[in-house]
Length: 564
Image: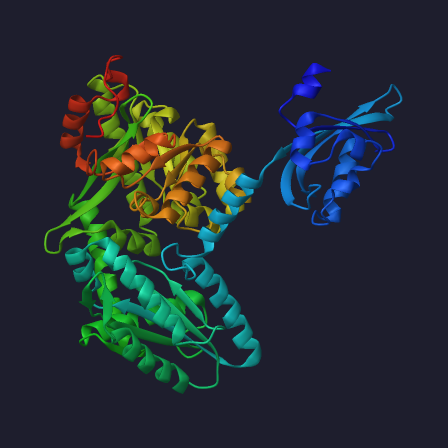
């Protein structure tokens, strides 16, 4: 009786007719109902008429068949406040399997639901500007094309890049640049109808979709309006700033009939606008496909890069906050081109994906990473983990688990020595296949992480299904956590949600003491970023490990991670 009465969890007991016969103090505190007011009542008195009828049907079916049900209900307190709760109900039955009474316990999950809603909103919107993000854009554009096909109308896709935005960021800092992006977003929305689509798809890149057009004249009119409005001066933090848009336009159905074609061709047209002096717009034309030849050249050079040993693996340490040491290193491929210089992975990885070369490149990365891990093992660093990024095509390759297994076997390593990182976007290309592939990898003992969390469009339902152990908080949310309330709340909610799901959290892009202190204070598990180390070549990484200490080498008396 004392355990029932003093439990911190609200508990309700009802008879076999589902009339309430007892409640505890916590129940009264949660709902406002006293025993005198509620004993003898049906639990329907708590109903908010918000929970689907199907949920109640499922509840009674499970109670009848298994004697137990757990699920979410939306109930109403005595004062009228509606809140979500996690209910766990057990049916106590006699020897004839007839219910004698029911015991239900409840947990208020309002905070968790709010966190899920914030993250769900984040999955479809750009956090800085509030505009649609890339996933939401592609989804809505797909719908617009379907509608246009039925109605024989036209759709225009604008790819917009801000001219000289990097100069503003470099001279005045990200804070001023962010304010400029917010103002630009407002002007973009003011140039189109509410029914049109405005999205931010990159740092200073935006996409507008005009729907329901009968000819291309409206697209030209809007483009002129955008040039005028975006080019007007901006007054930010006491500075008069100027930027202008380079705009590429593709039109359905003439320039493409799919989302990918229209986005690609608008992007090609935008680069032509930029090359012709900026602050202008270009409609896509077939002649622009010449630019694709340069793309093909890059593809050929990438294959030669592997043959000519122009590729090299770099490693960025991930710090274990609890153990105060290097727990793992993320392997990052770099291309040292003899003429172009250092080619960014953001430039050549998509090319590798498009051509299918990603599979050969991926095998090379696996082999080099495993080879380096063995070298470290021989130097006495025996428990260090190397994290390797998987692309969408690699993740969905039927040969993936065989390749990983063979690599581990060839180098005498176990699955526990590797962690594979996938992006939300890659996982959601085909969630069912992703779950199957990741399950196969887990059977090998390989660790799994979701990378760039918050920037994609992962369904929370699928996130729970993925057999992952780690969630990487994207650097875009870490960057401003010291002074941006939205980023602070999102980071806090993400860490909390991840821990509730039994996941560890790695914060990317940690560059300041303040960011580290915030993450330590909010129980983030691992941190990674230039505050500790930039990506290092193998020799530099070895030196770093010897100086800073990998977890296996860490002295028990080692000080906590320095934040000075």
